[in-house]
Length: 292
Image (cartoon, rainbow, N blue to C red; front, side, top):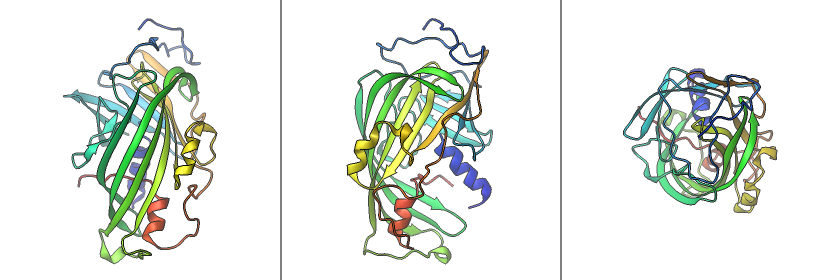
């Protein structure tokens, strides 16, 4: 994969009232309050609204800019180049080939809400050394667990915290380029299952998640770690670095919490490195196949 393609992968993966005094150090960050005892409707920000996310000190920031909303689908430009389309009602990237439904957030969103989602889609991995597709199945349970005050690079905000446990399976690998197909089969039909634990902090006046912590594990036993992901060494953390809408501008420091996992190996998977499909499946985050 070219360096440009690698940056695209990174930027995509970083991407789920009455006025209050500014909680941010920035005086221009005057956000409206929202009643935490009532359901929050799907966001409808104006085109031109901008969000900037940080994924760690070693990565450049990722900018999302809303360019339009049509029939419940929001269109964003990622770093003013790549286009991202999301379904407003579920906060989920549009994928016409997906079977079933992925639901990161289910609007209207209220404290103590719970939901389940289940979907299948084709996954893809590409690098300078190999390019392959695979079948992906995910079944998840989400719960709006709390209203919390969070401090991220953009400032301090009141947020709804959503806890998500997703159980997934990868199977049926298919090399896109036989000349670069170097993986071996340790089983007749390689299958790897795992669990992805995610915590999201959604800020209604901002209209997007301001903080995300995520960790992949290979054993359902580790699902008990789904709370307190911010303190887990093997969790990846993405935070809001800046928000801008008309006269509102929230920005404080470049990075406060964002980081990559400290440990190379996800927990609960076989730790021995090899050239099998199973190793590739357990080590790499899922990415849906993108239209050509």
